[in-house]
Length: 162
Image (tube, rainbow, N blue to C red):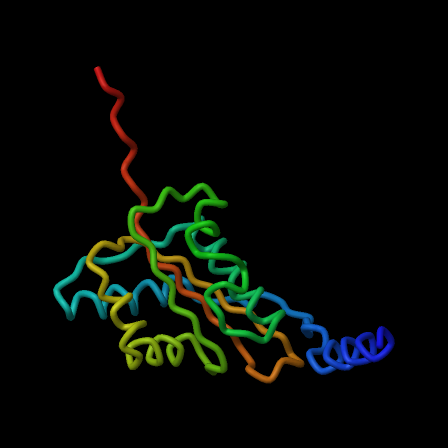
């Protein structure tokens, strides 16, 4: 009986298989162009501009790379967003994330987000003032390029009580 259970367990493990990891790398992206696209879109909806946050860029780079390595467009592939931004010292007051894969360009990714209700809502979040943006590829992964756009606002430092 024990050998039967062992065989069934091994067969089930073989069916699940190991989670495949791909060789991946971040790719150069035009963060300024993405900032301009987001700012222009927000302006058309009566919202203020965004600036580029180097710390949010780091979070976006890590997320895009993790998605490419796992060939998985997932908000948790690199950990939960609040923990990822806290890990780079970003004390967020508002935070959101748009992810995409398989787009041929940054502009195509942006247009995909505009066409998606949840992603479009993030672009129009009145509370965000900064972005981070990155892309990554895994040449053997079937989804092609992966993009991550992090939108946030850092809390203002609290004044010491006098």
